[in-house]
Image 1 (cartoon, rainbow, N blue to C red):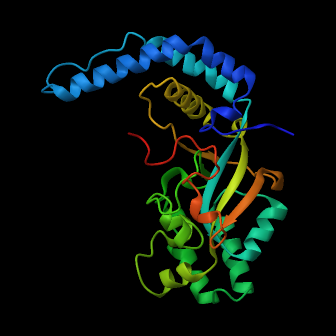
Image 2: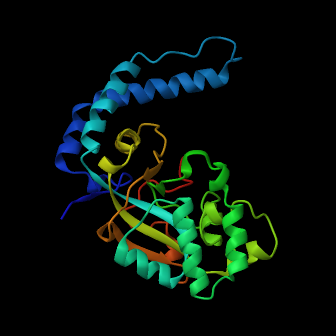
Length: 271
């Protein structure tokens, strides 16, 4: 079984990954210390002069690119915030997870009509209003989006996703009214816990930087928390779906608040 890496938990880093980080420990200390000093000096200035340079930046970015080749071969735990019916959870558990497209939205709506959750007219209104038709969501079509860190369920970045069925492809263009009410009352908020091989994403570099940031924080460096969004543009099989956390379950409200217990970089702790 593939060992999972949590990019927010040093205890999950394998020996090769830790060795690479330890080899560059002094570089990271020097880079982040200089970066912090430059930031404080800039904030205290009149902002008229040039931004101070960091003599360690070149070596730091070369190391991040080298580490990307390592993270590219790893599988990380990621999180998808959504609202789903029980039937949809059963389907995902059996068939896996698919990128969001106009076609998948059409199929999901048809299933909901078949189950009596929407009328055919309501499904038509939702489908025709989807921002996927005019690319209002830019590059989001054809991708299954996740986060690298477990967010609090009351974080503003995920509350709308948990509150409305169907994701942005369904609710994005409904600010109020009966349709939005229907989308808000269908299903249950869910957080999917997913094993994602970074080889099927374009996000190995972001993962490398998150790994570096976490290790640097363990050295008392002032580094950001390293969280990032990632996506898969191909099907993730049922084996990738590790767990479905559902609203009303005991651990649902604790997501991002110490769950899992080893979470070291909690949203909001960036002091």
